[in-house]
Length: 201
Image 1 (cartoon, rainbow, N blue to C red):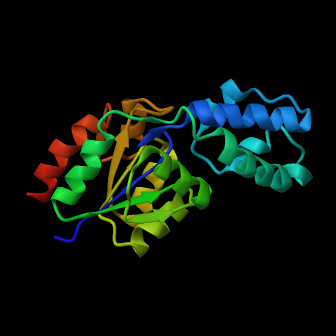
Image 2: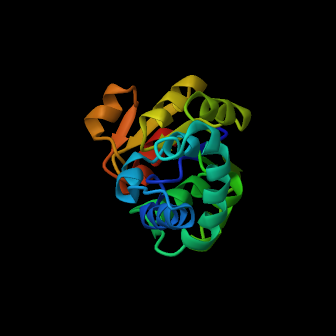
């Protein structure tokens, strides 16, 4: 069996909340616009423009998103944390001869910086995807499994007709992920290698 496993990035592989909060604080300082960064990091998952639109008028969203992405390179990398089981999960995919794909809503070049910062090597990286467009990327790269923490990740997996795995390390509970259509739900990725052994067998 050809095996390609897709993973979401924020709150699936990495706890990026400290750096994202710092970036929103920097954006607020640069523009003079109050931003509740603590609230913003509870809503990770959808495209950046969705969050920016909560703080800036519609005609400024694209410009502010570009500024955020620039500030991200300076402020977001320190404090990034690997979530439990990540290294072992990626190793498990490779132990079965598989490829690791990261399919994320994050701006792709910043996602690459983040992965390099924590030393995670992946075979495929696709950024700027969300919900159904994650499904497009999964189909393009012949993925068979997709792992994510957000309801949008489950939508993407269902759209691609791949195994949808939810991890309750983000904003949604195991019950919410299951209700959204996840085939399998884990508390965190420490449970993934054992599941993968069974799945491949």
